[in-house]
Structure formats: C-alpha cells, structure tokens
Length: 213
Image 1 (cartoon, rainbow, N blue to C red):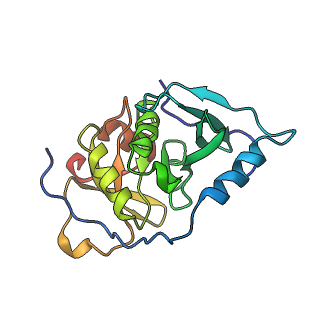
Image 2 (tube, one colour):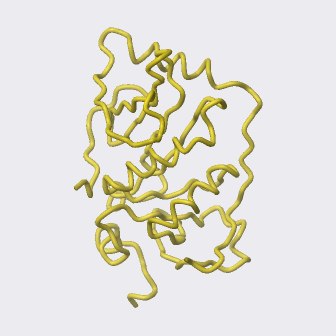
C-alpha cells in the first residue's frame, strides 16, 4: 500500500449538498490530438524513460495504461493498442501551494483526453487507481464542469471534504462550506485515498482539523 510518494530524478515535464466550487475553466475548441501525438513521439525516443503497465479496469479492453514517475509526480498515459495512439493522460502533480511536510502525501491530478474518448470513464478509472494506491488528492483552484462532476462522482466512494490552502498551511473545513466562500480560490476539494482518514492525514501533514480542537 502506497501512503507516501517517493521522489525520483526528474526527466521531462450521502454528503449534504456541498458548495459548488468555481466552475470557470473553459476548454478551447482546439483538438488535443496533436499534443498527444507529440507526447507519444517523445516517449518513444531513444533514452526515454521506461514505462510500466498498470492493471486498470476501464471497461475498454483495447486500451493499455502506462505509468512513469519523475520527481515525485506520477504520469499515466492511456494508449489505444489498435492504433498505437495516445488517447489521453493524467498527471498527479506536486503542489507548490503546500509545505514540505504535506508534499509527500498530496497530489493534484490534471487530465487531458482526446474528445472522442471523453465521457467514457477513463479519467475516473485513473483517479481511482491513484486513490486506491494511497494518494490523497487535492483539487485545483478552478475546475472544468467535467472535472467538477468527476470529483463529486468519486466522492460517493471515497471521503470527500473541503480544505483551505493558505500560506503553505492546510485547514480542514468539513464536508460543507459556507456559500460566501464559493469564490475563494484558497478553498479546494480533498479526496482521501485508501488507508487514510482525516486524523492520520492531519498528523502527517500538519493540517488543522477543527473537530480535533
């Protein structure tokens, strides 16, 4: 079970109605296929890092999930075996907003998928892999409509709550936050990975939890 994320050398780059966090990220109309193709070519160059294969049940048997880790960040690439093309990826990023104590335990996921493969549960499958591996996930300051729905969907199976991130410190806000905090960019969603509860995460990261006094 993975509870702290190791750092390796870098290579390349049932809950009451919750607050609706800022859904103000708008994707452009451009097609990401070109970016995905550039990534695919980069990964196949001589000297590129070796990728491991993950066992992820996505409901799409023709897809394979490749993984690498660099500088404590985890990259999951989704490949269509029939065409050899990348159809998307998710990066579990380190957060510059948190301090050194919290850094080993929190990651912020970012995904990009070919439009033809969006809304097929691939992002959810990769996020679940991260959570089941013991990652605790913190949302970004702004979310797309799809990402917002994804997080709340995951919140049905993993503990979901809200935290304030300010001056490198974490403060747990509970399962709900007041409406006036809706536009506060410091308020984020938190999903607890396998093996974690609030008390343990607070002890590991120094997060302030009001219920603990």
